[in-house]
Length: 409
Image (cartoon, rainbow, N blue to C red; front, side):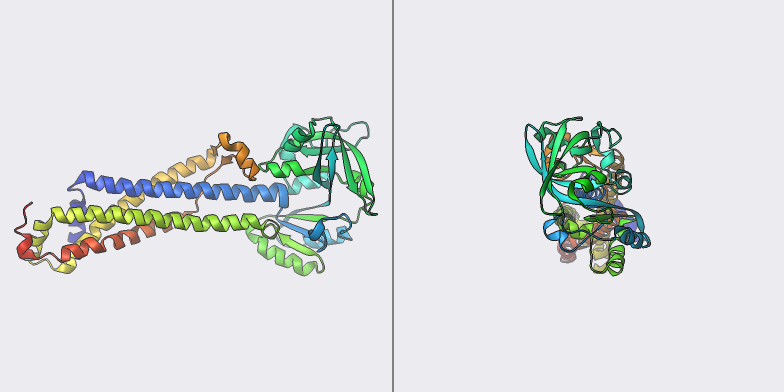
């Protein structure tokens, strides 16, 4: 206890130097934690957007559909398949779609698109497209028996189409013949992924069946939403056993680039921590060496009156630990408060919104850090202090008491 008390008093003998070290550690950790929180928020947002708008949690297709997404590769006996899916634990909602590549065109322009034939009410349970509307409505309005279509905002600009505009869909039917249908734009949606908005349109399944010849018991894709994304792997394996002959893929398999980005950012986070800790090590070493040089005579006197080298070493280690822990507590506290506030309100990078959307991200980011990472940072800070104290402690232990006490202050 005496060593602890002396060490605490020693670090405040030069308040300016101690505060410089503490603030350097504190703001270094704050910068690191906040950058990691931003990256985590970015990736969580991407995963949530991908699941809620694009991929859902799990998708079921025929194996052949994944190769060319042709209208010819259809899941048969859909009611039976969906019943087996619903009987699996962890399932929140299920819907099915007819999907095929085709052309959407107006009198102004045309664009290749993925046409999604959906049951609007069931689709609401699985995806958030109905919440992404910026104009019009979600299939609530009809246009004199003309089927309706939802298009993305980027596609609307390209086609120069608005709500009520006519859009011609050209697609291949189950017989291999090209067929066309006239649609009216009922709504325009906008997600965080402008590429998705440009290449996807949604029509009602009945009109898609009439256009392509797909039967009501057939479908291209069955989308599954889970109650908890942490159950993804478990439920995927269960469905693979229940649905032999069909391809059952989780969002991780469907969009591996997201998984790769999550892994890359996780590694980058630890790399950032390593760089900051190395930099802080030099800051601590420099401060403690200066403290020892200023107290050379004092340390020599302590040795001369009988304080052994182990206690001298413990004193230097304790002083270094106090500096690191105080700085870490300050940095973690500031980080926790700032991240908590920005997590609720979000940070809007509106100036770079277009660039974010091109990459499939929203410009509004909600930073987030798991509790374990705060603990990890705290432990790493203490370890860094221990490593940083080795050189100053060795310097102190090499002092010769007879020479040290004659040292000028």
